[in-house]
Length: 134
Image (cartoon, rainbow, N blue to C red; front, side):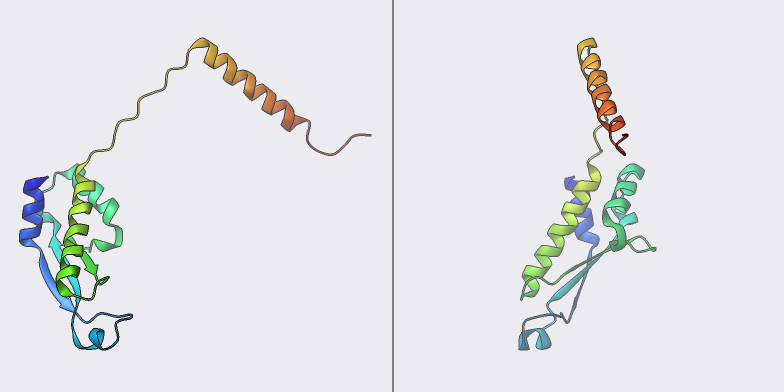
């Protein structure tokens, strides 16, 4: 993860824009919202990780292959920059972890019998529902 994270942060472009929302005069005067752009193809992800990244990023990933992260939860540029970088790293970290393979559950004979018995009971309960016959 270390190499990919460093590469992603190295090629990330930061742009500060005027924020929206509460903050009064500060919001109107200072461009505190940070937009972080990273070209995903330059990071060097393997195809499986890239597919997971596409799934995780959703609308944050542009058609041109750029990951766009915007952060404006803080009043200072530095805090928003750190928040955007942390978000980028968490998205990449999540994409690099392959999903666990599902193992078939093995039921013993007693377990199978219990399950079928419970199904039978549920079936009779449902069968007895309906209009009352006189």
